[in-house]
Length: 178
Image 1 (cartoon, rainbow, N blue to C red):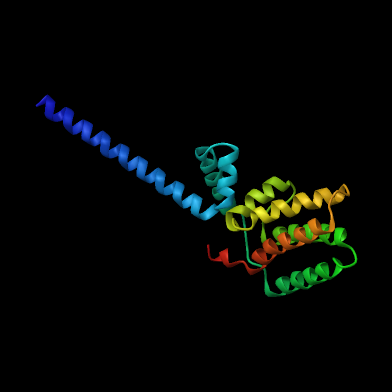
Image 2 (image 1 turned 135 degrees about the horizontal axis):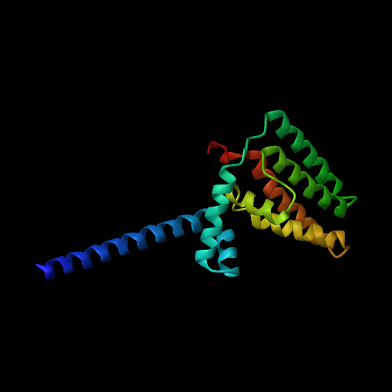
């Protein structure tokens, strides 16, 4: 009888182990699929397990925020301001990039994202806009270089393009169905 119990215990432990492995694998796959490049960036800087813990924590934190869609009048106002920012690029590329950085932060604030610390902003926005957060990081880095006078016109053009990707995502707000 004790051999039968031992076999049952071993089989139960194997089944439990496989179930835990499967659940963890599915969670990893889901996070990797949702966050894409942001998952990879975090996994490279630490480990996949640490990256997943960070992304799960971010998701819980952001889902508690009062994120809201923009009203149509707000959306139109920001779109008009963006067009003016792009037009400014011709005469003042550096100023246009700094304006784009400010405008994106304003839209984030209007939507309900906390703003202030850039890394926190990028982390928060990565939950709902994971495909464009790398653009945001790149554009912000160029804006910082511009403040120090170390960004060329092509860099500034790329920054505006990168800001535009996040700006369009924030205005379109398809994730508001959550």
